[in-house]
Amino acid sequence: MSQPLSERAAGNIYDLGYRSYDGPRLGRWHAVQALYVQGLRAAFGLGRRTSSKIIPMALVIIAAIPAVIQLGVAAALDDIEVFRLEEYNEYIQVVLALFVAAVAPELLGRDMRNRTLSLYFSRPMLRSDYALAKLASLATAMLFLTFVPQTVMFVGNALAGNDAFNYFQDNADQLLRLTVTALVISLFTSAVALAIASMTPRRAYATGGIIAVFVLSSTIASILFATLGDDGRYTYLLGMYWLMRGATYWIFGAEAVEGDQMYDADIPGVVYFLVVAGVTALCTWYLLRRYERMAA
Image 1 (spheres, helix red, strand yellow):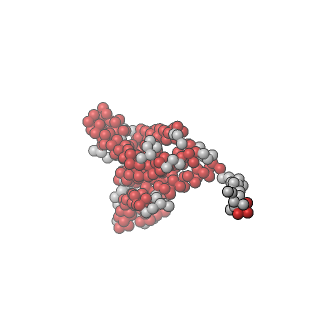
Image 2 (tube, helix red, strand yellow; image 1 turned 90 degrees about the vertical axis):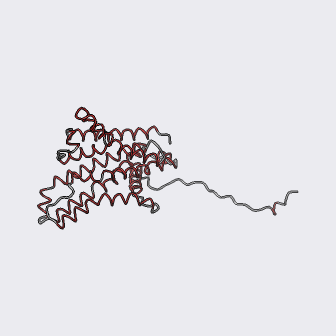
Image 3 (tube, helix red, strand yellow; image 1 turned 30 degrees about the horizontal axis):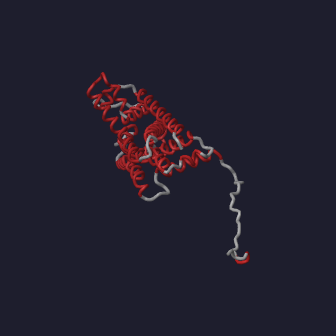
């Protein structure tokens, strides 16, 4: 038997519908800027647990050690260069590879694993915007390894001398070359690393692949050149480390010393630079193409 109407439980109906957004719409470029800043923070583990900060911060510190040594020597002894600007990246080339190998999978793999790409691509931001923002984030982070330590070393050398103003005036071209080199190397390593990282959401695979490309390519190039001699000198261009070194020397107008393998290869410096530019462009194209065709 049903209860009387007066004894039934009372109920209320609430309007839980969504209201339309009436605030400002910042648009596509603000979204790209926000993604760039978020990627730059993620590169150093900012806003995440402490363990995420250890590796990138440690690598930045290690990359600055040659600059610190040079500053100490310059303060104690005049006109002594332990590390020259054109050779700096050669001393930290392994650190550069380890940094992009640690950071690139973090920038791309997390979104692929968590399936958040559909949220990004549902906004006015284009797929190419996403890829280029990630590339810009990693390249900017790389400047903390390729530009900041060398600039500090340059300024320190000037201040350690008797006339800092004349030092700056006489070596202004070196500062310009340093800046160009840092930008070229940062874009090159970032484009290669992100192109590899975009192939898989698995961090371990991406990290291993990036390290293998940088280390093994240089080892194989050296072996081939040593085996083939002058007939195979252009096999030297297969090594990522040798490409970075050759491009850096060309930008600084420096030459390898006799007995060095790069001296024996005797490849024009502009060739190294053109190959670096070509590889950077090719990897960037692949990265853009990869996200254009990737299912969200």
